[in-house]
Amino acid sequence: MPKGFLTDAQRDRLNRFPDDVSRDDLSAYFTLSGADI
Image (spheres, rainbow, N blue to C red):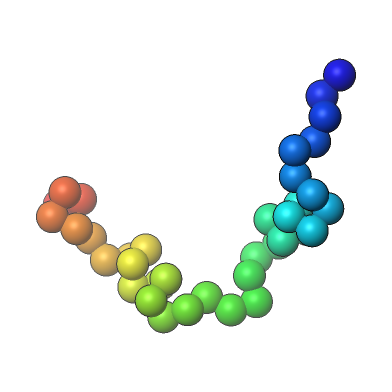
């Protein structure tokens, strides 16, 4: 029988979008690296 490995708090955090995304996170996600090109 499967048993969960996430706590209720972790599951709650991962089941929704974050309230705020930092500028650094956005920049890192949307900036292409040399390997990407």
